[in-house]
Length: 233
Image (cartoon, rainbow, N blue to C red):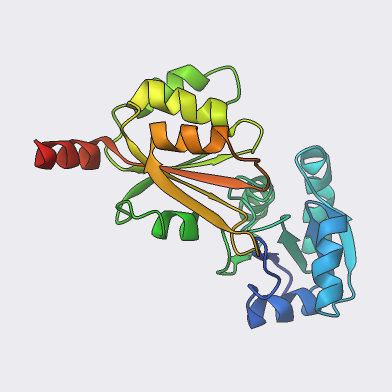
C-alpha cells in the first residue's frame, strides 16, 4: 500500500542504522533527501539504488502537492534528513502533516537522533526534559530565554559551532553561570566529545578550543539546580 515512511539515518557513524531502515529504503519507489549529496554516501555504502529527490526547507512547500499526488496514485516514498530523525529540527513535519490530512498512512521508524545520547550521557536528570532545538537567532530569542529561566526540567538545545560561545554566555547571563550543563559534539564519530561542568567552566573551556561539528547543549533545569544548591548549603 502506498504510504510515507520517515526514516532516521545515522548522525555520524554509518553503522548506526537499523536493518529495517535499510530494507525500507530498498523497497520504496522514491527517497526524499534533505541533501542528496550526503544521502548518496549512505545509499552507496549500503548498495541502495533508488531515485532520490531533494526535499528541504527551501522547496518543501512547493514540492508537497506533487508528492501527495504521486502517493495517492500508488507510489511509496521515504523521507530522510541529513542525519537523525526527519521532523526533529529538520524537514519532515510539513510533509507528514499534509499526508495525514489526505488520509495517507505515515510511518516513522525508530532510530538515531542526536539529542538522546547527549541527554543520557550528560549526567543531568533525564526522566523529564524540555526539547528546545534551535533557539530563534534574533527575533524572540531573548524572550524565549527569559521564559526558560523558570523551566524546571532539563533543557535540550541544538547549536552551531559558530554560535556556541555566544549561546553559552547568554545561558550564563539568564540561568546563572553556576548552572550545570553539558556540551556534546561529533556524536558517534571518531572525535566525539562530551564536556560537562558549570556554564562558566564550559565557557572557559570552549574559549580555548577549536569547534567543529553539530552541537547539542544540555542545561540543568531550575528544580534540579535549586535542590543541588540547597544540599550544598
